[in-house]
Image 1 (cartoon, rainbow, N blue to C red):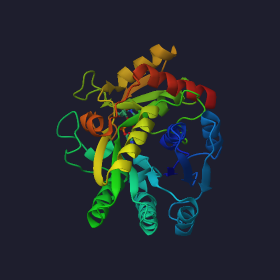
Image 2: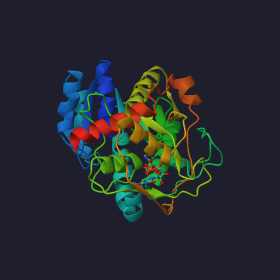
Image 3: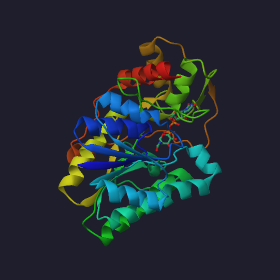
Image 4: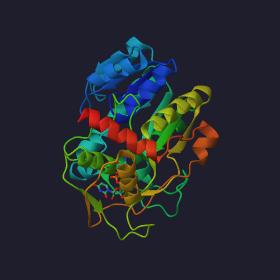
Length: 332
Ligand code: WQD
């Protein structure tokens, strides 16, 4: 089976490609390298000892996408390509709507043209907004709180409409919680630009001396220690989740939505403490005000993914914080 992975050079994409190749899928990547490097392609080949095809370009380039489908005989698509920084999306909403939505529409148009109707779409747990209760189930109400999550929510709607128009589609929408960690080869991992937005990138920045100190955004939340609580999932587990989703959409048409998390809840301080203990390094931090728009706590109910995808995360916090640091040490 030949899978097109959009954004395949990125953090989640590269790990997903490794998982696919190791399970004997053929892989074609399209990536515009706006937030990733081309050498990731060679790293994936080194890790897996398998070959893959790489197209450098933008998904909004209809001619290119058409050419890929004409040449490659794609069986299914894993659509990960997306801009993803919440704070940037607030400042540049048009960029986010254009990039994330236009690219998806082009992709879906060409997939339809070539009768390729199997799709995995990477959505985000941020579309639950401030959840009414915890843990979060897939049928909870959805409301975007920033342009980035709006793009994910719109695309989920587009995919529902698409399936309603043609029941031959097989679509799995994966709602990611907070991916961290890296591949055990430490060849691929997360490469944030400039000043990172997310917690783990910031922590490794401080640990490797690139950043002075971590601001802990708020210690007055109604959580176990006052700091924000999230559901962190190892990126390799997330990649395995994609593999399970491919297996499912291969068997049956339909559209369904899955939380990909661990169901575990960790506060910012628990993450810092685990990072310090496992990696034997001190993280300098100060408590600061809440970050505007932040949610107090969110973590997944993973029952649906377990029952329908046969997916369960296996990697714990120790492995996550160790792998995040080991990758950063070798690549910063
Ligand atoms: C986690 C916790 C912060 C940075 C992100 C993305 C979003 C989505 C999911 C893909 C919070 C605290 C953070 C820092 C801190 N990904 N924090 N100091 O908020 O869940 O959202 O992940 O869809 O795009 O924005 O993750 O890592 O930013 O924050 O104290 O310097 O760490 O307040 O409690 P979040 P995060």
